[in-house]
Length: 94
Image (cartoon, rainbow, N blue to C red; front, side):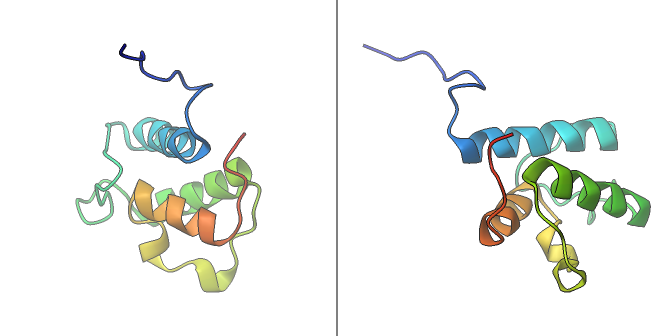
């Protein structure tokens, strides 16, 4: 018997977190990106967007991004953001 796809409320916390990140990115960038798409390298993102992204990460995952955390590689892709949040013990559920 095949199980239907999980809804957002049934998705594992990490999957739901990535979906939230991708939703934010799509709204902020005006186009959809995948979890491993580097929106900085493609020119979709700039320094002003980076500030918005850090603010989103802090609020969504209930953590403080410290100055030493501001390396671009932490925020270059949705997958990198998730890894950063998990390493800092951020809240994956909203």
